[in-house]
Image (cartoon, rainbow, N blue to C red; front, side):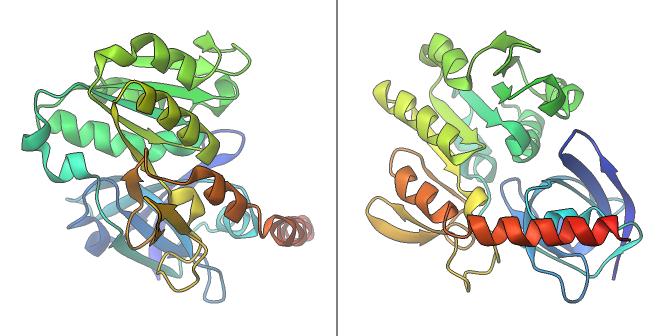
Length: 279
């Protein structure tokens, strides 16, 4: 059992959880993820490592309620049954910061995609590399950890679909205005967003890294749900990634795979909501 310090709501659909898991954070590098289980009979939930305190052995995770498993996780107040990690491959820039010094880097985040972006920007700043962030969401209340990302980024450009914060529009609008200022783009968020960012950066020949963590289910490579096509070859987001060359990912196939279990997920979510209502 893993002690929870807090499990709090930070937006209309997002939560931040802090848990004691020193072995997970001792060797982690930004870009990797952990797998949590709320109870013994719960499903495994892969979540990107958002932040950590190595002195206190604390692991911080951000998750969005999108299905039955994440809704169940909101009920955890004292302990998690299981926490395992770090898993997956770390971000290539964070793994080799000296190699990227002098490069002009921009991160493009959508929604809760800012959670895996934050530790990378923070890590790079600690290693003498400044980077900019373009952060988009549907509306102001969906923008999370604004103060934290502003503390570590050189500049932050906000965009919202409804114009309630920052500029009205999409992250690609903000990126296109400044794309000639950058050598490398890292994009993390909804698959359709990463596809559109990659199409834009390919046009301008800007190296692009994307994270395919939205495809992950089990996080061990056993279920096959996160299989994706990269440069014409099958890859698993959880074991081969989660980050890949954005110009080589078949995003259309990835989006089709994400829709396979949509109806079953809705049924499970409705069942979990009823259980919560009935106590």
